[in-house]
Structures are given as structure tokens and as C-alpha cells.
Amino acid sequence: DVQLQASGGGLVQAGESLRLSCAASGFAFDDYAIGWFRQAPGKEREGVSCIMNSDGSTYYDDSLKGRFTISSDNAKNTVYLQMNALKPEDTAVYYCAAVLILSCDYHGPYDYWGQGTQVTVSS
Image (cartoon, rainbow, N blue to C red; front, top):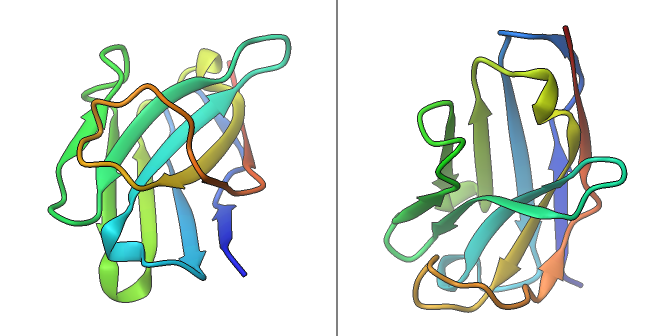
């Protein structure tokens, strides 16, 4: 059974940091890209970051690059999202998802999704 378990969210103050984890199982982790997405109440889901587990190449939304860092530990089948200097507008449910692609420059659907983890940033 394919599982993507997002964890690490919580309630923090503006300027603080969180590290989210996405633990994957049930598929060929090294062959997949893992994306982080977020959805705030009343807003559309948006892409945050992506990593190719095959070679470690990454993508970041332009507005987040410099604050967020994605990384993967293939031995643990886990992808991380380090979020620094958090802002109230970062408040959202953060989801990780997996898809077989050759590049993170991709705008189509993802095959597998986790349940998401809530990040709340207070001002």
C-alpha cells in the first residue's frame, strides 16, 4: 500500500522555523519526484517545492526560494521541507505527493498524496 505521511507541522510565531517530513513507503522512492504543496482555507492548492529523488534536483516557487529548502534521504525514503523565517501567509495545510516524472518542471497531476500537516504561523 502506498503511503505518504506528512508530519512536523505546528503552531509557531512569525520568524520561527519548522521542518516538515514526508515519510514514503509502498513505491519505488528513488524513481519518483516528491512535491510539497500547500492549501490555505479558501485558497487554491499551490506548489511549494519539488525534488527529484533520482538526482536530487529541486524546484522552488519563486516567492519561497531562499526561505524554504527541500531535501531527501533516500535511505530513509523521507523528504524534508525546512521552512525558515515563517510568515503568517505561510499558514496552510502542507501536503506531500509523489509522481513519476523526469523533471520538477511539471504542471500535471501527482499520483500519490499524503494526508497533510497543518502549519500555523501567528503574528
